[in-house]
Length: 491
Image (cartoon, rainbow, N blue to C red; front, side, top):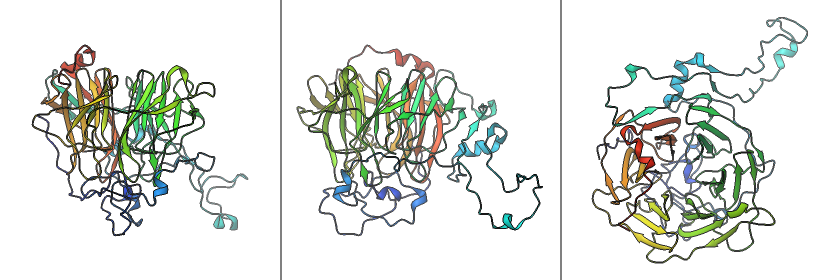
């Protein structure tokens, strides 16, 4: 590959990828004795830790250990007291260049002002008037404010090195509008027409239920209000597009793992909790994958807090299912052939009738393998690969014509910013020159393809999370998204 892996600035011993409580500190180690419920221990895999929670006592570094077995299968019940209030904006010193950009262009940022202690009193007295009452007044807590950038910061010629127009090129997106008030990792971004819908993921301190929309044509962020029965804050869930609706499944928060399904209608901006037929259903999980095929959402793998999974389930959402008259229905799929090992933080792409699974980790080791599941015959097959091989977890995989673009992630040693191109015809990796200023090393980000450009949202590098957006211009490869007629002959 022409792209090179950027070395991590600081060597760290990664912790777990699925352990709910260890996620707060990537350097924590387990010193307890309750290991009987886990068959896999993690010693060398990264986690999406919380820099703000370093003082919290940590428990198992095993990838799937929860604080108790019961916590691993618990389902979050939504009520008025469980919803997380939107946090006020705060000055973050996590080294994210987006905030440096805001500081350098402060005239383009508008913030609403809150009541000040120096404001005139209702009686009209001056701000420097002193009364006994004013000296005993408790300090007011500022109300939440929303960041707004009135105009984008456009790049200048001096910021960009000369490059041939035919070569793929990285650049920072000149975003503007109602900027997200939080960083983004283990979130989902789903494209509907030209709008990318961002939901969930970890903030600096917790997970979020905010919805943000990003216009891929104008680069404008908006923060729409939503109605209905909101899902709980979550991360490492899946969001699957079906008839302009986002089907959210799984995920978790802390020691809680979800098995609930929520639906967001992007037209009416209303959340619903669909009706589901009583019967067998998958275990609560996160770090799984999901694809949509023939009216069903196909779920694979993930972790429960106790163990990694390699089961396959379908959720029938066809014909407007989800009502009392026509509920959705779960069904476990019995596949044929040798199965992939249990794993999470892998990726799954639907290529025709084939679900292509790349990488992931079982908490003990990271994988280089590529598996294909024929969703018609339900047969698994392992792709025979040539050197070089790439270990990846917490990466993204986006289909671009007859290729899958694999971006970033963790290679079992460090986070990377490398872009890999996987040829779906030869089923091998191909080197390709990429210029510009790529995103910094990261995992747990999200990517989408829109208008012959690859968009990268947020991520986490083991020390800090990001709120930035990067664009990969396909340049002469802009024809690739239009390549739809090809066969995966090697399967």
